[in-house]
Length: 381
Image 1 (tube, rainbow, N blue to C red):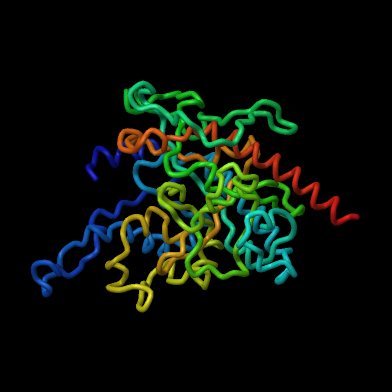
Image 2 (image 1 turned 60 degrees about the horizontal axis):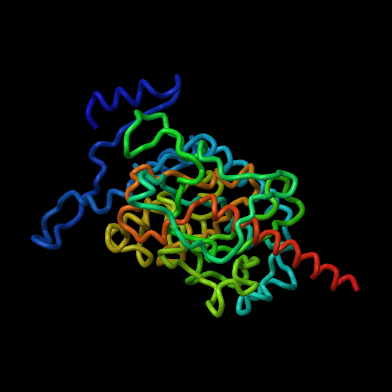
């Protein structure tokens, strides 16, 4: 880090905020290609090193963030994450250990549980999640999706009127105007390329929740996930919008909603490191979960891209990400990939307008609410 760049950062920080730089952070590893007896800086494992910093500072902070350097994270994101996490913690503390309908049914999307009580084991893994977004730079050259999936766009929210996503939360940047980073993009220009409405189910949290109600259950967990800890929901394709297609599970790359990093509270990290993860979340990174102290096999996506956090890969944690569908909160789950380069690399039909997804999820939530009322009426007879 050049001195002038470091000073620029220090000058931008509020009074009393600490700032440390680890310049030679790349760990040493054996040069297996040329000389197995020679040690060289293993830059491939640089993405692992933030875990050592977190362990060193663990008892000094109650919140930790680790994101790739082209992601924009704001105070709105952090505040929302902490508030939603606190709400989930309240639910977890009062939740029963077992329930007669847990493990839940997943074989038939039409029978999946999408409201009602949840167990401590299910809520142990529940955390707020995020979706990466970009801003369209030229809608003529690289445009958004032309043919949205066949779920109606409904921008009318109960008790909230007409609502759209709020791009100022994720994507209005305090940077010099340039063709690569528009300062104040409109809602219609915010796009998602790593997911669409087909990936999501909706779950109404138990009534004890006072911050979030209906939530979006995101993909990720799968392999090695315990049946009793899986969280079901009302799948967007439950009414046949996608024909004979099966509900996606696990981590298909075009649906998983990679978030380019992770954030977690001190207590969440402690729970993950103490048993929720199949391999340790903090060092040491020992066999059999890791080889060569975690320098082999585990790539950037595993460490800093948050794949370990929310998937069931080897040493994964299978944390279940949730997003609030409430119009006051949904936009706080969108984080800006300021490089704005995926729109140039991937097919146009992958470029889902975030506002369209928001409206489609609102439609699905209304469908779920209607079906819930039918189920409750049937039970009351």
